[in-house]
Length: 242
Length: 242
DNA sequence: CGCTCAGTTGACAAAAATCAAAGGCGGTGG
DNA sequence: CCACCGCCTTTGATTTTTGTCAACTGAGCG
Image (tube, rainbow over all chains, first blue to last red):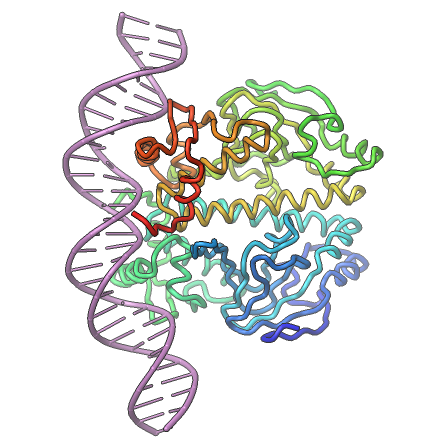
């Protein structure tokens, strides 16, 4: 069916990402129902697409492993990365309104997702109140996240944007058991720039500036945050200094 | 309870905004259930707040009349208008994730909203499938709208942003029976600027430029669009000319 | 009638984009 | 195994866009 991906079947109840993408405190009976939400899993190779703009919407996807970007594009070639998603996060919400996806989801490294047919989610939501509420929260969380991105794009300067970006990434990675201070960027400078509303040269220069100031160490896509407090100060400096 | 607002009770089934905020094709029995979604109506005076950041979340609101802005703010005084909402649109979705609102909703003219307690929405959603799906669509629509704003903020120049803004406003007003070419802005230049990620002076200059070029007529907050095609060309020019 | 606030406009400064060049890393094929 | 190629990245010089600061206008209101 799809070339750079394969499919097979499994179950949620003993998934180690359970607490990231499912409601907590379900009875074993409810858990059994919720297990039915995931139809199959699907593997996507680096560079492969999970879904693309215009494609019919059928399912939401819970990321099990790997890293994705979502991006919208216009006919005239404009392109905007709308988010980077990692394990435990849900993608595909954009497709619900019009029964078609309105953005592309691209794997930035080999990935595996749980396919959750949306009609099944709706069905089981009607029975399991906690799941219903959970779905609402996930969508609301995405809306609030995007408010944050709008604030970033609408009112921050380049350094503030990059600082906020790094802090956000490392915080999410930390919640998944990774280091608080070290991370590997899965995306290019250009993709970071697209997400932050900057050109790749500006992203690169801003990284260099942070390095000069001893705030981070950068070796290719490996970043070590040496002074997280400095990053935080930059984010909410509102340009009081320099 | 709240000073600049009053409350009283009513019903959806014969509301003239029905097709804007409710699913279509409900049986009269279902309609009866859905009527229960709206607890009361509430009036908000110009400048008044429907809800504010940090406030406990209880309800979504369907705008019956009037015009709102929603905005997020940070401790350091940064401020970002995240949207302008008009009759038939739903606000308050941001509150679902954390049971508290994360933005302010301010009436830009005297307004009236239908208060829909969210627990009641969830309850009735479980019975009326069409309502359940409708709620999902509304949230997804908001997510997609915000993607569009991110594209605007991340990749457009001032003229493109303002042109897109005007076209969007007039299109939504037209869907509500107003003119395709004339509109009254309910917000200040500063609020437009905040939404578009520009300073008020830039908004003003860009308006002036459009006027010079004969694309629009502007008299205070009254705008007449003389050449909608020119606006469309500007929006997806991606700067091929100029 | 004078005040306040929104809006406009100009001159200048700052930030980021653009254009250009060059270095480095990883992968491929000889 | 090494050389080459393509792409990502960095850095510099310059231009463009937008922000900042300031002055002024005009509308609405007490």
